[in-house]
Amino acid sequence: MSIADDKQSLAEFVKDLERLLYLVVEMARSMGLLLDEENDKLLREAWKEVRPRFDEIVRYIQGEALLPKSSGELEGQLNDCGLVGAQLKLKLRIYYQRRGEFDRAVETLRTSPQPGFLRRSFKALGRVLRPANRILESMGFVPGVHAVKEMKGIVEELTP
Image (cartoon, rainbow, N blue to C red; front, side, top):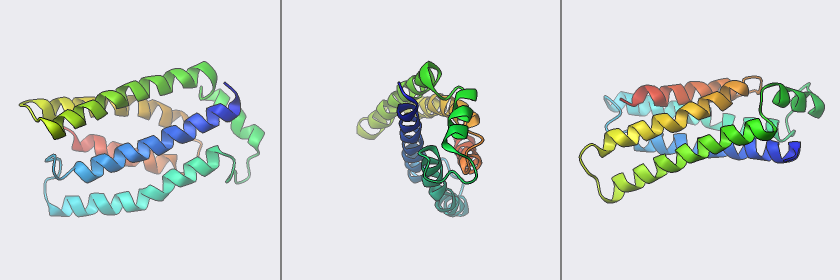
C-alpha cells in the first residue's frame, strides 16, 4: 500500500465516521437516547457545527489544505502516528469489522425488533467507536479532528 493509498483510506474512514455519527444523531430520539426536546435541538445544532470539520479533515489528509505544512511533513506525521502501512490497515480493518456488526444490529432492530436488541445495538455502537477513537487520537495533529472527537464523545455519552 502506498502513502497515497493510505491517505485515501484515511479519508474514506473520516467520511464513514461522518455517516455513522449522522445516523446516530438522526436516530437518537427514536432510540430513546435523549432526555428531552432541548437535548435533541442542541444535538442537532452541535452536529451542524461539527459536520463541516469532516470535509476539512479530508481536504487536509488529501493535501488540499496543508496550511504551513508540506506534503512530506504530513506523510512523516502519518508515519510517526502509525497511520500508514500495516498499522493503518489493522486499525481500519478492526473499525470496519465493528462497523459491520453495528450495521447488522441496526438493520435487525429496524426489521424485527426483539427484547434486549436495543441494548445489543448500543453495545455494537460502543464497539465501533473504540477503534474510531484510536484512529482519531492518532490524527490529533490534523485540523478539525478535535471537534470530531468531541462530537463522537457526546454520542458515546448518549449510549447507556
